Image (tube, rainbow over all chains, first blue to last red; front, top):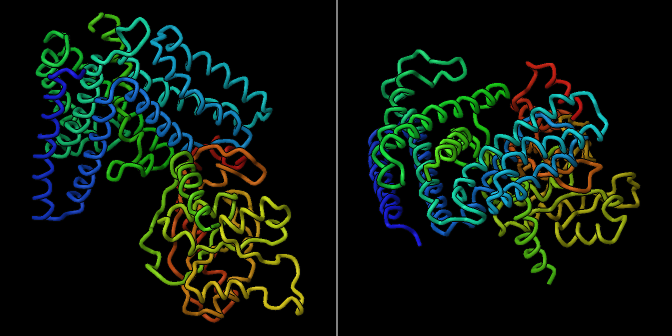
Length: 310
Length: 224
């Protein structure tokens, strides 16, 4: 059974997005600049993503996990397509895809001890062995490092969103944990949008970091403030967090989200590309969209796990 | 009968596999003519090249595509021959020798173009190493001279050579991009014509990001 406050919350999101869509539609009709058209494209894709995500959440924890597993697959495939790979590693790469169903089965069973060591330890050792047995040493360090790093990002870190669904469990999925996932994903994406918007509206030309010229101090501060404010507003109402616990969650999500965002930016810079893919018109690839979530999910999870806030 | 089977296999197996599992993108779709005959000329690194091109277009256009392939290769065993003819409507071409007694080797291709079909030709003649474009065989010039009204469209396929390279049997998912180039019309000079198409494909290849700043990247690129 879906709790009432989740339904109300989803309705608020839909209504807000409808208002934004109407305003942007009016602006595009009034003054169709390239930038506004880009934002319009983004909003259309937002609708698609939000509807798919809501359906995945509302259909229960099993479907939600399948959805996150698919997301991991798309992100991993994107990452492996971008990095240089060696033809000798083809069998290893095929095995790498198999870690996704395995990791998500561990999550579905709520098997915390194995979940936390599966990718960083078991898969780590397996990949090194598999690649060294393939017998080609030139480019070995680069190949194994990029592969491990991609797996950590797209399977291990993203898997934490799924583990939030089973956090209270002694083995099994819990429907009511959907509020925690909703809280995490909503604040992460809101933080993204708010940082982008504040940067565009009030950002000066000075970037705070070398990686991305679009990241300004104004954008970061504005985004963080909105995220903290929203966390304090919706936390006590939607979840079992107190105001203070929500406030800290907001700070953690705001800062981790920013760091996740610029990390993927750095990856793209190094590879000489602008977007990680073409799956989401206006946004780029799946990795472009989940970049902040990669960092916020484990931070949020361990925050509520250590302090037993569920 | 075979037509229904062909549509079913494309719809239920080939397309879900390529679009869902492997991942395909079509870039510069607007450069394709809306209707009529065309000659698609592409680089060739994998058996997935033809299914990838076909899968990026509506299922209704399935029977318009006619890939051209080597008779000696595709007809060497019955399973391969069956797939080539019934799943992809291959036009077989004698790759090795032309004797005057064999008749016109491009007769089937010409007939397909007259029926407003879309030819898919790989002028390298065989699957090469990803990132290296081999020399072009002159067949497309002959066809273009015979059908000067038919646009010749250069196509650059990136990624299929990683998914299923020449000596591999098991595909590994990598996102593939199919770039449509600017249409080229017959200009009267066989060599120049080949050169223009080749250059168009090379230009699309050169637009890809390079990893030349890092020496390690360069090693990896050479290995691939």
